[in-house]
Image (cartoon, rainbow over all chains, first blue to last red; front, top):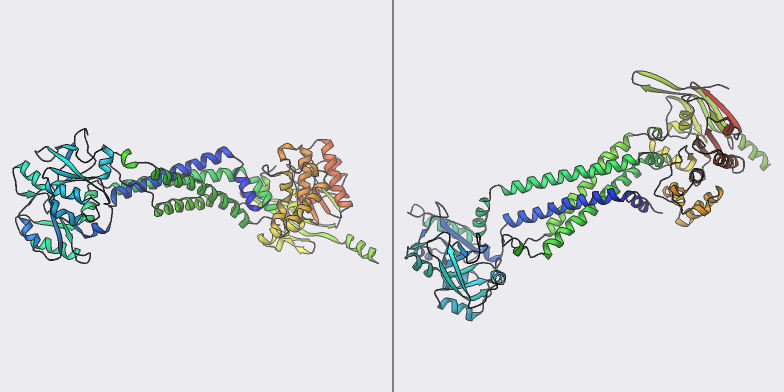
Length: 382
Length: 234
């Protein structure tokens, strides 16, 4: 027998309690990791190279206020801008969806948009078809797959923002962007349907280089300062984070739930370890009597507590990893979540929490053992 | 010549207790458990400590075994003042010099008889082969070599106590302390246990100190000491 074997036998002596404790740790850590994944998905926009270059220009008063289309001439003269297109959120409900359509539709200038979505892979003939047909659109592959759409199909939308219901012919399917769900169509088509109001929702700008992006942002804001339609230009990331802030203080809410989960977990583990040690108080006194030192008894308790917590960690964090990576979360969440992946950082966080729990849960029993002399322990025997 | 030296060594006290006091504080009351005990125990002796409950016999046994400390006085075991050792030194000293046998056996329930006996050896630097030999020898000495893979719950009370004796013997200590080792046994098993303890004293030269209430058990010892209210009464 080895000391490790002795610790393992002690840990396994009450299998029902052990399995219940490990399960409670595992379920709590699973929940904790899934909450972290959800929080990341909701609050951390996808950050690729293209998004570092892209700038969104919106009305300074509100995103809901349109911008004059004539601003294009001013924008085109600002140095450092490589590409620019009107970019208007259509807010359509796809035919068949009852309350919510999980993918966005944007009205853009197709010729001007191509330099902005350089990461999108679309066959040349499909792009040409899109440029040629004012009522056509290109659809992200995720949406096409989800609805079983193919080239030549038609998509009908009822707008929840504009008094114009539109129908598009799919001429292209793109993929390779960070979010392959959106539909892009001709701004002219929307303008005509609305009676050419001469407005756009936002401008979508691509800076010539990452270094120039902040300068371009400042120049755009300056160009329209004190005009009848002042703008707010910001990086695509900042723009998306602005949307996130509309969720309310979800970060605090999920953070609060996570703290409660960890605290409940700590109570469960401390209680389990205290019970396990209390049951074995007689034996620990005997071990002390036959020569085991305090530090060796501490090591037994710590190893058992740590082992229990880490086993729960492997099951909980591992379970979350397997589940998040094996499920089609986009389909299950109706498009709310895109990636829902457990990152190495989250795995590290989960195991750190498990390790900390193991150490903290051992503290109370260790203090009890330290405080109790051999004789006090032996007095409990008879 | 050699025989004379051996005889002299046998006569030399292994335990020397001088003016030993132990006072417990119970709330605001001081309870004197040992009141100036002085006692010599010679090597190879089988000493029984007798007396009524609360007379201080277990306290005396605990101080000799290094699991309790006196309020004043000295207790030398094999020339070492055990009252002067710190906790870590005492633990090490106990592992090498003292074997414990308790009334309630106190075997670890999840370990087999073999593993229970091996437990004190895990603290030594012996190889697994050496440990195996010592455990086998100890189990053979108590007549339980054929029960080594049994868990405590699969053994009778007498067998459990014999395993406990094997655990006490396995590190080859010079001193074996037994606190009412027959208190939970039937007369037949008690006789077996007492015979083993007696033979350890007589044949193996171990010094055995046993606390008992039972005069029949005390009769197995080579000397009996009575305590009354913390003092030696004879």
